[in-house]
Length: 538
Image (cartoon, rainbow, N blue to C red; front, side):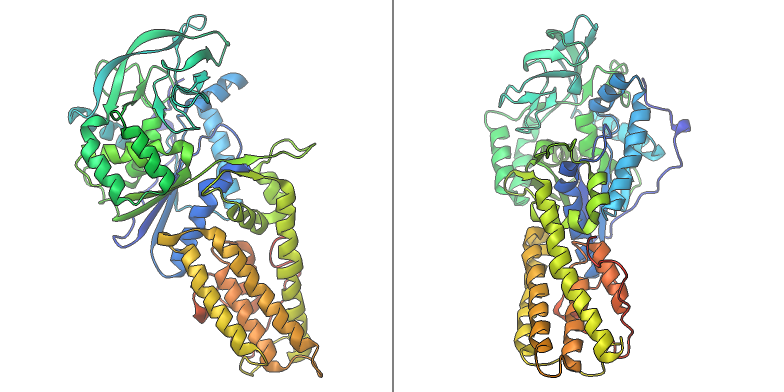
C-alpha cells in the first residue's frame, strides 16, 4: 500500500503566490476518510471564506488555501475496513469533500492534493532532507504500541487508548481533545483497532524533532503572535517542564517514504506533513520558490493546534525562517442528531436548506470561545428568519417598485420621513460589520444580528410609508432600494449565493466593499428584476 508514483498522478498544480501586502489564509487539511460532516464545515472553512470574501471585496489581495490529508492513518483504516486501497479512498472522498465545499460557497484558491500534485511530494522530500541535514531531526528509540496477532507496530488511528495527558480516548500522535502530542507508547490500555487485541510496548527506532532546543525562538514567536487565550495557555502547558519531542516518521506502509538512509522503510508522519503541507505547496521553502508572505492567518480546530501553532513555527525556525502566521482555532462543534436522522452530512443539509441558511447558521453558532451543539431545529429557525424577514421585505419592496414606479428605480433621491435617522443607523451598521469581518478583529458571529437589524430597519421604514395616505412616495422606494443594494454588499462575505441573487435583481455588481458607500440605490431607470424564487435560502 504505497503512495502512487509521480507518473500516475494528474498534471502538476502551479504554485499560487500571495502578493507581499496580501493576507495568506490557510485552513487545517481535512482527512478524506469520510464525507463532509456539518461539524467539519462549521469549523474553519466557512469562517475562512468569509474573511477572504471580505478582503477581496475591499480590494485587498487574499489567498485562501487548504489541503486534504491524504496520508493520515485514518484513511488507511477506512480502506482496510472496506477492503479498498487507501489511495482509492482518499481520491473518492476528496472529490466529494471539494464538491461540498463548492456547494457551500467556500471558494479555495488552491486545495493541495498530496497524492495527485506532482511538485508537492518532491517539495516535501526536499524539506524533510534539509531538516535532517541541518540536524533538526534526530534518531530516537521509543517504546511504541505493537500488536502481536497482527505482527505490526501501531501508529496514529491504528491504535486506541487513553491520552496520557487528559485521559480522553485517543490514537497515537496527537490527542484531539487536549491537542498535546504523545508517541503512542504512553497510551493507557492501548488496543489494536484492526483486531481489538491489547497492544504491547516494542522498542522502535525513528526520527524525531526535539522542540526544547528551539524554546527561546518559539516562546518569542508565541508572544509576538498575540495568540487567543486558550492557545496561549496551551503553549504555556507545553513549555512547562520542557518542550516535547515530536515523532516525524512512523513504521507504517502508507505515506511518503522517509528520504533518509536507515529509515527508508518508514513513512513521513502525517502530523508533520499536515503542518508543513501548505507551505511546501506554496513554494516558499523551495530552492527558487517565492518568499513566504508577510501576513498569514490559519483557521483550524483546537484539536489540530499542534501543527500550525507549534510544529510549523519550529520547522521554520530550524531552517532560519521567521514564522509569520497567526492562528484562530474553534472549539468542538458537536452534533445532536434528531431521531430518525443518521448524522448531519453537509451535502444533505445544503440540499435541503441551501448554502445561505447553512453558512449563516454555522457562523452564528461558530464555536470560537466555547463548544457548541448543532441541532437541526436551529437550522430550521435560521431559514425561517431569512424567509419571513429578509425575503418577506424584499418581496414587498419588489412589488412596491413594480406598482409604484413601473418596475424601475425611481428618478427621485432617497428620502422620506425617518430616512435621515435610518441612514445614520445604517452607517453605524456598516462600521460594526467591518469590525466583525476585519482580520484583526475577526468574529463573523457579530455580523448576523447587525444584518438582521439592517433588514428590520428597512422593513419598518417601508411599512410606515405604506400605511401613509397615497402609499409610499418615489423617494421612499429609492431609499429602500439603496438599503437593498447595501444588503447585497454587506451580506456577500456571509451569504454569497443570496447576495449574488439580490445584486442581479438590482442590476448591480456582486461583491461590493462593506462600506457605507454601498448604501446607494442603482441608477435611476434601472429595471428591477425580481427573481422567481426566494432571494436568500429556499
